[in-house]
Image 1: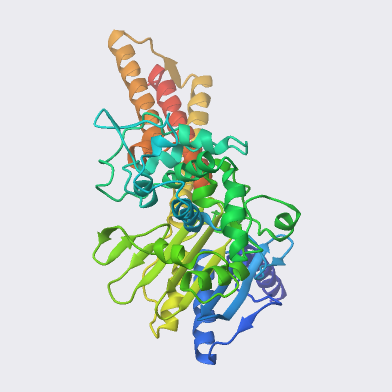
Image 2: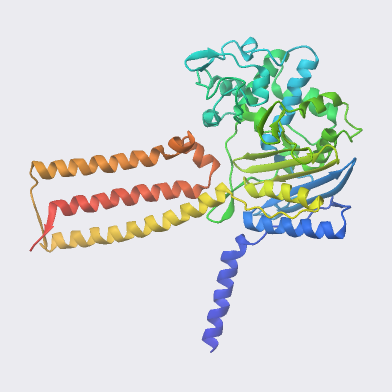
Length: 500
């Protein structure tokens, strides 16, 4: 009986250690917490956040809710560093991901207001070497088409953005578009391509004669009073920056993503919940501390082309007009994600920042906004990273089992050869042709595996390794190894036949 009890205790301890990383990180640690919600709303929101963080294996998030000119909820939950258990607070810094685009858009609109550019100007007016083609002919893309993602530039161009922290990184990024074949005629069709906004960032540099970072800092960020929003890494950023994570083998793992300075106008501005509260109020016209032109803010909300019924894209924002006017934008980088949503008429806004790339972050922001409208969030959440991780683990298990079984049979075959239970059989031309054909099939299969991401997404395995779980890479290696080990077994046994 004692042995049984001991076994149960050891089993409980073991399971606790294994399952600990799978538990929710949704604990509050924020000294700057603000709560002016009703008890009912707060309970619903925090219960909802807790469930989604647990489902999504989210290490940490920072949430802010504003109403009118007031911040009515502000809270950091989980960890900005799991290892040291450093908590997320409203001062924790995160990459804004694609929510950076709205800043760049305001930079462009500000240049137009100052009569330095016109939105209907072709991009080559400012970047003469930037020639792209449509149906084999040079296509003229306007600044406005870049702004609204109607340039025709393929979404898969994200694959070409170079890893770089060089001062010329932005120009290097835009140069990858030279002679690119557009997917559609400029101005005709919406197609979200992050690199559109990198081109806008380079136009800003060419027109102003200063770096994109300096222009945005002096012309947008400082006038708005966003004191915790950064375009450069410095001591403050290093101190408050939340560590980035990526899902891997069912839990978040620390991931130091490559630097894409050339993609900064589209996705790499850094900020925190306190500044996102100001940013939301600026968008809704309720923040008196901003000196930035309010008319330009309103202009940035005006959509151009309808995408679906009641859904449009404006200057760095999606605009939904079916019931109420709701403006929002999701964002994701390899190890961060964000979601911002607000209603300019009701003056309610929500921002969620996280240190992992997860669809659950958008769901949290959308769900909080819905709860504030008296609605329940009941949508199914499909997180591609989580799904890819689970599928990869399954593939690893199957491939590993296949590999072990094959190695066992190879070992057995060698023992049979040593015991003279298998004898060498010389191959004729027909046999050699069969072996050659089977080798071609195996090589072809290996090539097909290598081409999978390009065929389905138009991207490389390098892109997949950066953006998706590491378990995918391990699964690929296991599949390759198991295929070639199986071929090795078939090759050996084709030459060494069992003695009758």
